[in-house]
Length: 288
Image 1 (cartoon, rainbow, N blue to C red):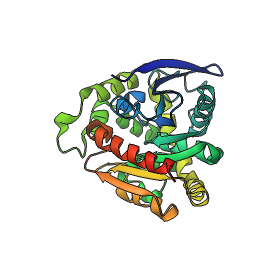
Image 2 (cartoon, helix red, strand yellow):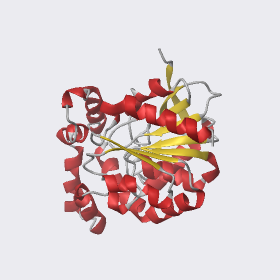
Image 3 (cartoon, rainbow, N blue to C red):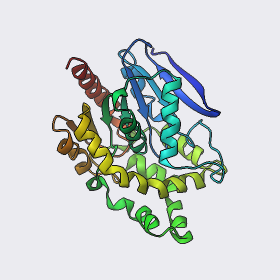
């Protein structure tokens, strides 16, 4: 059995919960989750990789078991989240590491890469978007809020916070939904139902426009630094389309792009296949 520890780091007064596994002397791998989940989404992946890598998977601010201050006392922006996670990596001793980016973890991790290109040894993007062609029509209600931050448009976004919306995110595009454990979406819905959890999530949906505005900056980083990159994508994702994965090769011609026949939360059904792709990719990267 893989030994996984569950810890909390004090990041300048802000508590970040995280999972850790693997030998500290092994190559480092940072796992960054997305909406509306937590580091729990990596529960199947971590044991498959911990034999070769030193893994840390934090809950982002406002998610899971990390602190969730009221949104009128804390700036729920992706810049702020990235600042805290950047400091977190320093506190846990991640001076050079590969990063797995998924959903909200992508704009978080890519901000770290732009700020500290020397620290990033490789990038694994699992439905972690950095190109406008990767955005589906599922973003239309959120984009409407970007254009007009009215009370009505903000209220419309609450549909994304409903329990059935979470279940749909987990099961859409999955050929056999009996393979999707209810543990993931049930835990996510528990966290979403906490008092005060809704406003931070709506704030982040509104701020997602800052990520799209940074796409050219992320793409310039790819072209300039050419980080080894593996895009492994659930091809039936209703939010991030396959062209978003293929676009990485435009800026990093040697990028590896793989598709799996599943939806947004690809680890729920394809953790073993994705783990194999990651091991092969990071092993080949280390020998370059």
